[in-house]
Length: 409
Image (cartoon, rainbow, N blue to C red; front, side, top):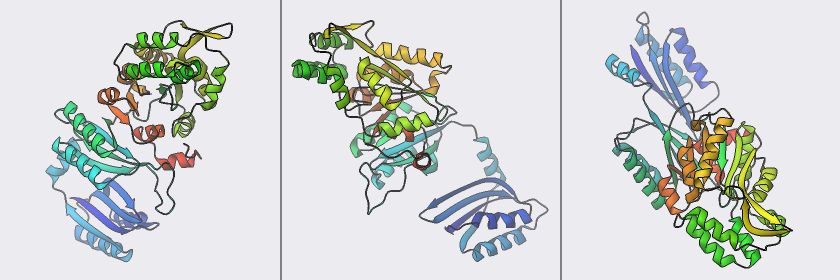
């Protein structure tokens, strides 16, 4: 006979060992088991098969007595054979991960997401907290809250389901990622990043333009390009041409003043610790990419090379302009170089010219992105720092804390 045993009560050391001791004495077979602890309250589920040779009444009596002795409640539920076999037949079916990420997570947000999940014929199988516990008395500067939902099944209309989740995200101020649970999720080995407005909170070309006295004009063209309103190559040439005559000496000063994005140091330290290769693929300039490479430990930098003659910017670049198509091409080339499939790569960016690489990467993430990018990317991070990416690949805060990687801004 198959039974589901549910145990609830206050968690204590050795509890599971004491309960399984009774099972062992009756030679019970464990078919499945799960446990969660919330604020020192434990909830255990154990699916067992009691051999025909065992007196079931004696087993249940001794188990319930032991549960009473250790001050937990236990309940036995008979699982019919057909129901059990149907459950077994579902293993191997497609499952997805839905990650909820924000400064805090409210009941309303979870209600709206879970309602959409149910409406689209999906079922939540597990709920896991990835973020650390937050103190009420001593709030941190950059709080993050993240829970992960493991759901079974596939929606009839995935596009419509993603639109529903995107709407909830926009209306309630929470990031919602939806992606398949497969062997690649924590087996990816290459992460590529856009630079401007992704790794740094600035568009470098705007800073250069301010130095050259053409800030407003260049900033307007930059905004149009990032929103996909004009061709990137055309906009790049226009902006670059306005920098003609800028003194080379200002580059170092600008590089040192660039503000890093919240969480970038924590993210890069953690990913490097885990063995990831990191690359900058930017439509910006290699001088600043190399500065970040040295500061943050990137393995590769691909960006536009400013042409400088006699200490002055000429208003041109050396070689091919790195636009959206070239970014995707570089990602593919890097993956091949590292012996990886594209499914083993992650791409992060904010602008329209990042969309090609976000689409071909195994995990593409629009970070604090322009509207056109958020609407066309499968996953977004808009409400926390860039280290929110760690949650999307299933990393828990406690794993980061063990590695002594601290919070940064």
